[in-house]
Image 1 (cartoon, one colour):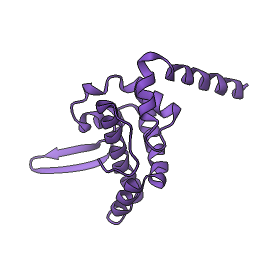
Image 2 (cartoon, one colour; image 1 turned 120 degrees about the vertical axis):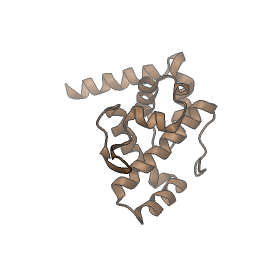
Image 3 (cartoon, rainbow, N blue to C red; image 1 turned 135 degrees about the vertical axis):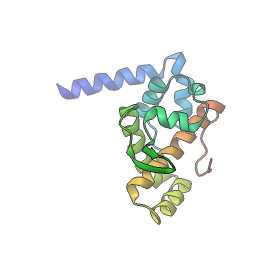
Image 4 (tube, rainbow, N blue to C red; image 1 turned 30 degrees about the horizontal axis):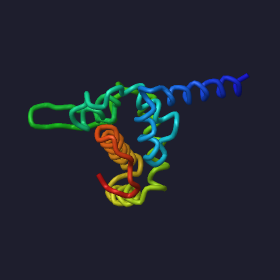
Amino acid sequence: MLRKELLLANKQVRGLSKLPEYSDNYKLLITIPDIGITTAITILVQIGDIKRFKRLDDLCNYIGLVPRMYASGDKVITGKMIRRGRKELKIMMIEASWEAIRKDPALMITFNELTKRMNKYKAIIRIVRKMLSRVRYVLTNQVEYELGIVK
């Protein structure tokens, strides 16, 4: 029963990837390491038009990859990540980033440098931001991703 539902869901996702409004961007997104069918379609469906985000920070805020901020006078304290945002997309991008650091040399180097000064869980959030930057670049400029190039 569960297997049939999973097969049906996969079939529907593949069907979405063939629709004219998603097919070109889908083909571009799957060139990024560890962004597969489900993640690519989730990005396209939940984000919509990437050009509505003027900056990477706007996109990260929409997904929920920003810390909580507590401010009083001149003192600013940053906390854990906010809970609002696109939870499914946030989780998918975090999981994809763990795999991408194994396949993309530029991301691996960045991750290793970050883990020298912070724990690996905070470092992976920075890698997610880099991956979102790459997603934004690929979709905005309509070019395929080239492995190992730092953007």
